[in-house]
Amino acid sequence: MSGERPFCRLNPLGVINQYLLRGVTGWWLIDAGMKPLHRLLPLMLARHRLTGSDLRGCILTHAHLDHAGAASWLQSRGVKIYLGEAELPHLRDGEPYAYHALSTPLIRYADQALSAPRCNPDVLLNDGDLIDTCFRVLHTPGHTAGHISLHDERNGTVVSGDIILGWSGKIWGPSGLFTPDMPQALESARKLLRLNPTWLLPGHGDPLSARDLVSDPERVIKQFGGMDH
Image (cartoon, rainbow, N blue to C red; front, side, top):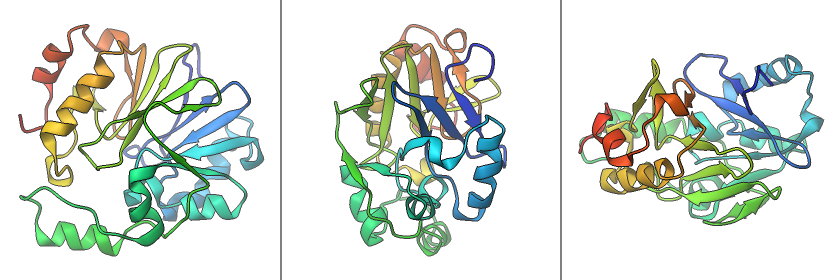
C-alpha cells in the first residue's frame, strides 16, 4: 500500500485505472484492463511484491473493453472473474451495448469491433452481495445496465467504476456518449455519494479523497462536468 491509502492504483497508460484492494483473506484486482496491456500486469503486481497467485479474484465493474479486455487472459491463468449478473450477456455472449442517442455510428462500430474477448465469469454478483466479508456490491446502472460499484465497509472506500470519474482533483460524471441512461447514472452517483466515501476510486482519472468531496450529494452532482443534467 502507498502511505495510508487503503488501495494501490494501477494505471499503465495514466488513463484507465485498475486497483488492488486488500480484503479479509487476500488481494483483489478491480477491473481487468485492456487486453493489449495484460503483459504489463505482472510488472505492476511485482511493484507491490505480488504475483498473480496472490490474487483472490478480479472484480469487474462492467464489461466494456477497457475494463474487461483482459478478463479471459486472467481467467486462463487461474484468476476467478466476478461480474454483475446483468452484464453477463455482454461478456459471455458478445451482446452489443446500448449507447446514447447522440453517439456516432463510428463510436458504436469501434466499440463493438474492439469488444472484450468473450469470457464466462466464475461468480455473478447482485446488489447487496458481500465479497470476502468486506466489499459490499452496489448495483449502479446508467453507464451500463449491469454496472456495479463496491463499498469497503471497513474503511469507507468506494469503487465507482465509470459512474463517477475524477480529473485534476475534481469530480466528473461519465461520458455522455457512452452512457445510454444519464438520469439513471445520476441516481447511481447519488447512491454512492450518500455513503460519504473516505476514498472514491474512479475507473478513469484520479482517486478522490473525502476532502475532494462535499457532504451534500446534490451539491456534488451540480458540480459534475461532462454530464448532461
